[in-house]
Length: 346
Image 1 (cartoon, rainbow, N blue to C red):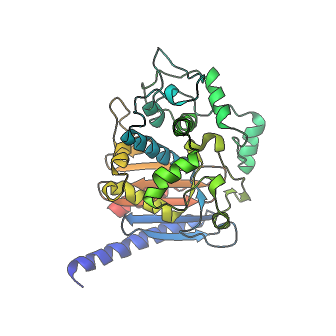
Image 2 (cartoon, helix red, strand yellow):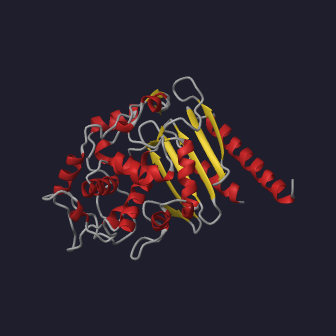
Image 3 (cartoon, one colour):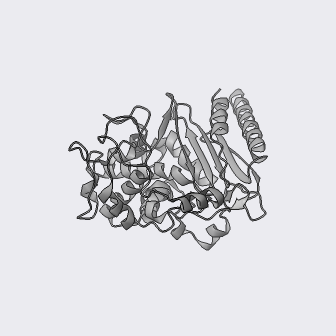
C-alpha cells in the first residue's frame, strides 16, 4: 500500500468516525435517522433509532424529503432551459393553462427564474390555515394541504396580491411559488410531476427510489419509514397539489448519489443543467442559485420538513464534500449537519 492509499484510508476512517459520532448523538433524541457524509465518491453512512416498524432505518429506507424536492424541481427547470423548452425569463403565464390569472406588480410579470429564486412576491402558502388546521398540524402533523389540487393552486392566484415587485428585494420563501413552477412545467410538457422527475432527473442520475407517493411500489411502501410528530405517528404528506414544492420521497442511497452528481456534474448527462442551478443568475439574489441556498462561498444547501419528517442536504462543489441527514420525526438535524460539514472539510 503506497502513501496515497494510506492517506485515503485515514480520511475514510476519520469521516466514518465523525459521521458515526454525529449519528449516535442525534439518535438519542430522534425516533430514527440516517446520516451520510464525506467525499462524494466515498460517503460514510450511519443510522440509528427506529423506522417506525421496529427496525433500524438504513440507506434503503424511504423518507419524505419535503422541500429538498425544490432542488429537483429547479433541476427540471434548468434541464428545460438546456433543452430550449423554455427560458429563465419566460413569464410563468405562458406555460400555464389558458385563462389562468397570474398576478403582477408595477407591470412586471412573474418569470420562471423568480419562482426558482423565491423572488416572485407570492405568499408562502396557497391557503391560509384556520385554527382547526393549525391545531391539527401542531398536535398530530396532519397534512394541511391534503385536499389541495393543482387546480386549487391555480385558482388561488386569482386573488393573490404580490408582496413586492417580482425580482426585487431579498428572497421570501414560497411553497406556492415552487408548486406553481412544478405545475407550469407539467402543463408545458403534458406529463405529471412524478413522471417528469423520473424521466428527466432520476432516470439519468440512477435514482430508482426517488418518487412521489402515487409512484411507490409495494416494495418501496414496505421500506417507507413512519413519520412521527414528537412520539406520535404522523400522517403522510403526498402534496399532490404542490408536488414541485415538496412531494418526493427518497433514500439515503439515492440522495448521496444526487449530491455526488452536484459536486461532479461532468460525470452525468445533466452537467450543464446542474451547473446552471448552482449559479447566481443575472439580477438574481446572491445567496441563491436555482432552488439551492448558499452558505458562504463554498456550500450549497437545502432542508425539508413535513408533518413527521425532517431532512438536510449540503454539498461543496469546491471540496467535493457532501452531508445528508434524514429523520423520521419533526425534530431536525440542520445544525448538526452544518457542524459535520465543517469538520469533514476541516
